[in-house]
Amino acid sequence: MVEKLLAAEPSSLGLTTLTEHHIDVQGAAPIRHHPRRMSPKMLEVAHAEVDKMLADGVIERSASAWSSAPVIVKKADGSNRFCIDYRDLNKVTKKDAYPVPNMDHILDKLRRARYITTIDLKSAYFQIKMEKSSKKFTAFAIPGSGLYQFLRLPFGLCNAPASFQRLIDALFGPEFEPHVFGYLDDIIIVTESFDEHMKCLELVLTKLRDAGLTVNRKSAISAARESSTSGWYARFIPNDSELKKPLLELLHKDAEWRWVEKHQNAFETLKRAITEAPVLARPDFSKPFVVQCDASDVAIGGVLTQVHEDGEHPIVYVSRVLTPAERNYNTSEKECLALLWAIKKLRPYLEGYRFVAITDHSALQYLRNLKEPTGRLARWALEMQQRDFEVVHRKGKYNELPDALSRVCEIEPDDGEIEDANVCKIDVCDIDDEAYTARIEEVAASPER
Image (cartoon, rainbow, N blue to C red):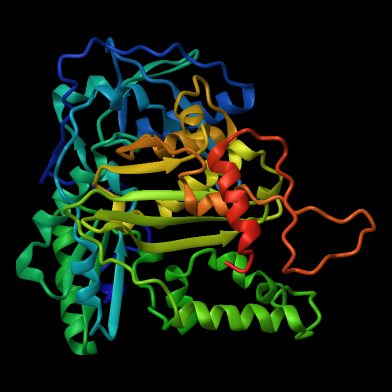
């Protein structure tokens, strides 16, 4: 079916006539960024990307009064990515309230699926036209080359996900349920039988082709594999990565297989966590979501919550161990990484909705207000610009989830011997704070809690 309906390597990007992207700046005055200085190497990358986009019909020369600055960021694979810093444009843009699919509804449809196909559109946003009067707002300047504007929807605009979801819904509406549905730039086909699956696949690929859209053949078909029970329930376990760390060490290529007490303890703790997990709330997409996150020296984690009548309930826990390189990040960078990774991991719940990010660290405001971001900070700042969320600062003494990790001081005895684990020795450090002192007394009185 793939050979029959998909070209091995499309000669050009698709372009649909079914929709256009419109920008409403609500009467704001033109925003002009001064061109940022680039090294000769980065300037070479920028010129090459501009030449390619001109050849592909993605951009054109401009005489706009608007100008946003381009940024070159490193991707995970080491290659360069050309982006535009649209943060200031997004601030004055009227937000599109078009909804993204309800993840609960999607998961319900997946429960009886035996065959799953995911279809990814090649350079998806570039396959949507910019509305004529909106092109000028996307203008950007390249040092020594001039001013350009987008003919097609660029990455980084706050309403881009909504525009794409609107297109997908127009193509695959309720009449395609329960077998075909779209989530942003992915189209998913689910069926119980293989014959039924092939019929749906042919219908979807034909409809995409007729709409003028180009499919990324390399990722057109992906197999769904059954995950382990512990892996599935891991998202409901706070600090899962911290708990699994001793077990993950055994999986290293050069590790000797020695099952000792710390591994057994980690295994038993995980079993208890799975069977005694806290009662989680089901996501309610009519209520705002809250993301809390934390970074330690070895791992990052987050929790998605919502406030109900009886208080704040967790919905999903996410965590992972830091890579060796990430462990060298400073505290602010680790805190930024924790939030951005959590938001990306929780995207199915957050995309298209305004949410609240709670932090006891100022790193988030620092990242948002960077004037000329470079390197990974530039990549993180650009990732944030499409998200619609409010940063709320919560004092450490009220931020109980990360507070337990951030306030405990482990004191080593003078003789170097490890004391009884049940003996709680905490240095009060002469801090004159009633809440802090009260917490110290609670811990000292009941260390087992």
